Length: 112
Length: 113
Image (tube, rainbow over all chains, first blue to last red; front, side):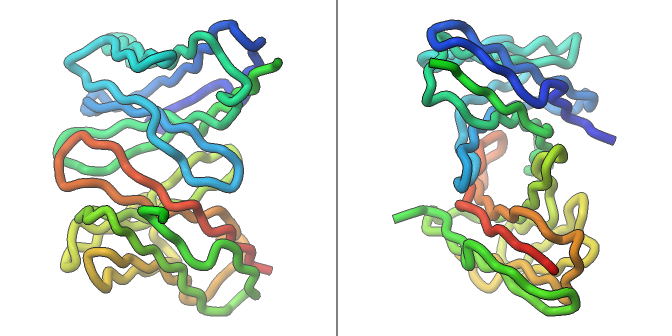
C-alpha cells in the first residue's frame, strides 16, 4: 500500500517556465512533508519542507503548497532552470515516528 | 569532506555470498537509516537505528541485517545475497529532533548475479 504517491514519473518544462510537481498521501497522521532532489550518482539532497500547521512554505525559487483536506502537496519551481533537471522525491513523516515514507519520484527535465 | 560516506560505492557479487555495506557519518546525528531504491518504487526503508542500542526493522527487512557499531557507524549486511537484492542502497542520518530532514550518503550500487 503506497502511502505517498507521485503519479507523474516524468515532467518536461521549458527553461524559465514554472515546474509543478505533485504528491498525494493517504495517511492522515502525516504532519511533516519534505521534498528532496536527486542527481544521478548522488544521494538525495533536502530541498524544502512544510509542517501541517502551514499551507505554504517558500525558499527562493521553490515553494511547497500543502492541502490537508485533499491530502495533496505540490512543489513549484519558478523560474525553472536546466540545473533543476533531476529526480524529485516527496516524503512524509508522522510526529514521534522519526520515519520517512517516500514517494516513487518524478524525473524533471528542464529544456534550454 | 562528505558528512555521510558509504563504502563500497559499487559492488558486484554472486548469489549466496555474504556482503556488508558500510556507512559512516560526521554529523553527530543519533539517528541512522538504510534505504534501497528500485526503479519505479522510490526509496524504501530497510532498517533504522535511533542510537547504538536501538535497532528497528523497516518496510523491507527480510534478507538483511544491520549493526550499529558506534554512533557514527551503521552497516548493512546481506547474509546470502540474491538477484532481487540488486538495487541502489542509501544510508541516511537525522538529528534527534522531531520533524527534521535527513542527510543522505552517495549510495552503493549493488549487483547480485
